[in-house]
Length: 366
Image (cartoon, rainbow, N blue to C red):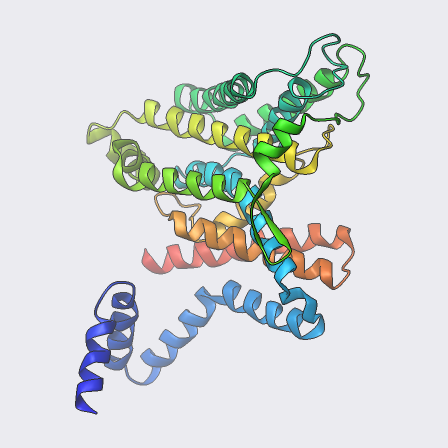
């Protein structure tokens, strides 16, 4: 018995259990009102996770098919499709900013990819299907340009991120509508995408039983790994967190604040373009509303995942968790046949509650 206890304590002191053990030790040192306050704070700070878990349990009981294999794979696929945009937005939030143009950037990237990889090209009549590597480079370049404009305006002219990205959002939406009216398309939906494009992105990676897992799940995992390396192992990542925590202190410490802000937004723009490239093949039907409100989902996922709007705080693992939880709850609400319009209300409440909890944590630390 003594051996088992020793082994258990030893395990709790290692790896991911270290923090749990520290919290248990801290709790054991508290008494009376301090212990009660600690429990209250813990419940309040994790209220969003508790609510989501309870909602998932409720939905699973009401609709057992919610936890079926096909449903789980669908949730994973939706998480993978929305993860790149969340990874991009997260960097902007770490800088104590935001980016509400992300959804329209996704839409523009999807339109460009769809117009160049369709077998019935009405935007550029007579042009055939373009090489996939070329289209990928074009889409990434467009996203990088959008990010550069956003970052440059903020860093150079000290404009608020909300104002800059609101302007960009409107510009991009107008650009999308004009783009779809080019040639003989007359604003129509883009479809008849090439088989190579759809297969590259949405083709079967492998099957679990009779359920197919799409290839973009693998791409999303790779992107998350790349972003983890950038955030945690590069100078850009360290500078990003330094600028987000305290821009003036970072500048005094020798960090090139302007370059850091621009690079983070360029990186975000590339993530939006990749999301658009994925979406074009995934939905196979692209119009002016593609990407609409995607930034709301991304922001909600980031805040749920612990990326703080006060800046300088965030983890890739938290972002993945946030996106996954959000897709689980929205998929569950669809299983309950909740009105699609009510989902907008729920998204708004999720963002509001998550931000309130985040601000409370910040004030307590302060």
